[in-house]
Image (cartoon, rainbow, N blue to C red; front, side, top):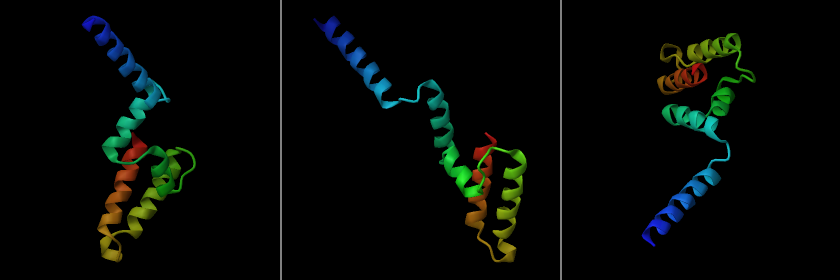
Length: 92
């Protein structure tokens, strides 16, 4: 009986894991990257105002936001560091 209970628990656990993640295996990589930086790819794109993952557009918007948030011109070091994290997330 213990053998059947253990098998049933394993099956239930596997089913609940599959139901909890409808994105499949590729979603695990995206979620892991998001957990490392704290940002989803969508959030990072919204912050830098980029619709595509065009390196040229990302770099242009990154430079602008980094420059305007420079502390020496009255910007915020906190926001500047967030812009750096966003760029890192998009570069992943």
